[in-house]
Length: 105
Image 1 (tube, rainbow, N blue to C red):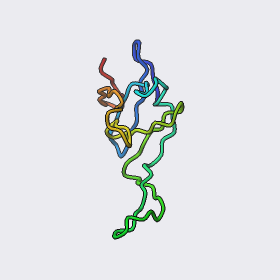
Image 2: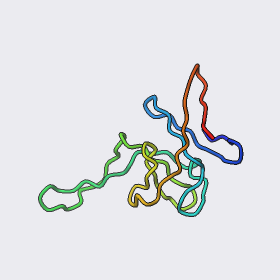
Image 3: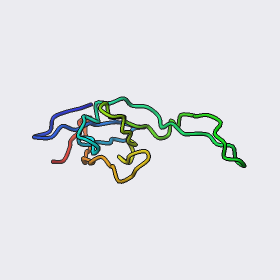
Image 4: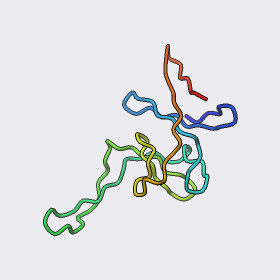
């Protein structure tokens, strides 16, 4: 869900019963990151001895949001970019009580 909160727009995600919320601004170039595609992290599979690539698989334990502008991909759980942790989404604190979600700020 993407909502306006004062002067900010935030995205709120529920994964396995836990809420995660971020400002809807991609740290790469300011795109509306929370309005991007949600998908599992793609992991390259490697041969144990030779490290030769054998294909790819989805890691459904690490769901990602992909910014629609340039494809920058972030873990919904941590807010970190999949390959470059210096790019990180700005977290917004949220709580839930009596079926209502409340965001700080």
